Image (cartoon, rainbow, N blue to C red):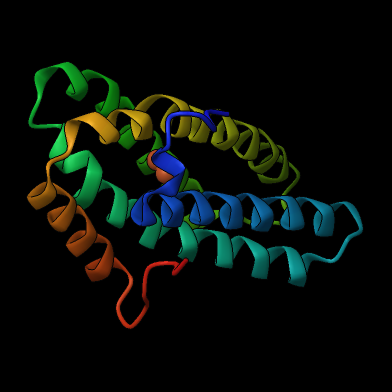
Amino acid sequence: MCHYCGCRQIPLIRDYIAEHDRSLDHGDRALRAISTGDFDEAAEQVRLMHAELLAHWRGEEDGVFAVLMEEELYREHIEPLMAEHRELDALLARLDVRDPGDQALLAAQVEELKAHISKEEDGIFPVTLTELSGPEWDRAIGAWQAAHPGQELIAD
Ligand SMILES: [Fe+2]
Ligand SMILES: [Fe+2]
């Protein structure tokens, strides 16, 4: 993990990272519940993971991603990340925690999500530090706010 560039000190990036952590926690809890046969809990954790990610993806895609995509250089890195969002969204929307095939898919997707998050936290987020201007941060924060109505960014 990149802990050195300073991007973790930026409030919006801190929220994105907290959302990553919460999503993975729900995924891990769902897998643990499946392993103990608690399918109601597993389904609830998948539902929470999906809800967390839907708001997260909106905040990310309409925020920092939208700003960086204006540069051709970043578009080729961000488009595959957005495709991975859609892929996981489709799975979580229809996942049956009692189905052994879906259980294996969920386990694989939680691992994929970890790799996806590393690409963002180590690859994309550090770039925001040098690339985003003040108005662009305002735009990105506005997108986060629209994706998280009634919530506030993590305070110091
Ligand atoms: Fe993402
Ligand atoms: Fe993300």
